[in-house]
Length: 220
Image (tube, rainbow, N blue to C red; front, side, top):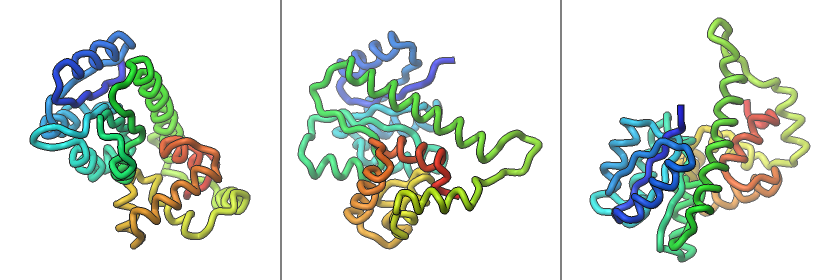
C-alpha cells in the first residue's frame, strides 16, 4: 500500500503540480487549500508526511504544524515547509516548531521528490526500529535498551548532562518550543543544544538524530 502524503497550499497550481508529481513517484496524495482543512485531513488520513505552505488562509502553516505537533501520534510526522519566506527569522521559527526541511520557493520538483523520499525512508526505519525495541512481539512485555550500553554510548559521545536531557525529550517528537517548556529553557538555547547533538552524532536533521539515538542506545 503506497505511503500517504498531505499537500497543503492555497495556490491551486502549486497543489496540482506537487500532487501530480508525487503520485507519479508512487505515493498516495491528498491535498488541502488552507491550514484548517489540512489539520482535519491529518486526522482523517493520518499521512506519513506533510508538505505545506506557510502563508494560507484560515490557518497558516506555522499554526498547522504547532497543532499537529501537540498530538502524540504525530510528533515524529515528517514536515516540509515550502514557502517564499526566506529570511533567517522565518526559518528559525519553522525549525523551532518542528519542521524537518525548509524549502524556499521557487523549487524544483525533483529536489522535493528527493527530500520526500529521504524523510520517508528514515521515518519508516525509525518506526521499525522503535517497534523492534519497544514491542518485540505482542506476547512479550516491552523491553528497554541495556542501561549499561546507554551509559557507554553517552560517555563516548561526551554529551553534557543538559544535552542528554534535551535528547531524551527530543526523541518523544517534541518541538524545540515544547522541549524548552519541559526543561525550562529558551527556544534559542534548545536550538543550540540540538545543533551540538547533530554535530556530535554526525547527523543532518532531527529524524536522523532520533534514529541514531535509538540505534546507539542513547535513550532508555
